[in-house]
Image (cartoon, rainbow over all chains, first blue to last red; front, side):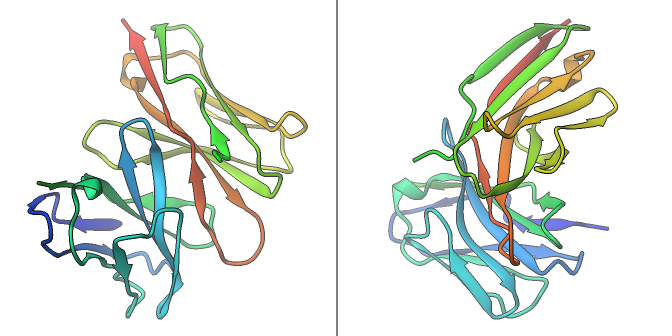
Length: 111
Length: 114
């Protein structure tokens, strides 16, 4: 029972590079979301999805794209990385909105 | 505008004593509240939650109190243990529909000293 799996755990990018952060859950949860955590800022919502084929923006969506082609996967894409996107990224899922399971995070550094 | 506020960045308590972590919110549409615990280099883990129709929820050493009129909730840990040392996040969810967005506070670093 893996829960929410995020890959990679660590990544260093150069400014302007692109990459995809992977998130997969095996709990058949309809709702999935991406957060970023910055020092002193708590967790801020980037994008979320209420089901396959449905995505929407959160509080800090600029610079990020998402898609949801399957219930299990919810990748986060950085098209042109910027130093301001240096952060720790967490993926979370829930079914029914009462229990949220988080992944272990991806620590991204943009130089 | 910060809708969920944890005004104490840090808290230090002695082992065996009570830890009280506070959280205030401004959005009257929030109907469900959660506390998460986070160790360094790990993802947040769910601790305890409370619905807006209740004023108290207890789970072992952890109790959450909700005061709707004051838009305030608190997490009590009794007795505190060194393993409780972590960052604690308060989170809130608006009611209605299938939009389960969580709004988080900035967190409180709890240190429990042996």
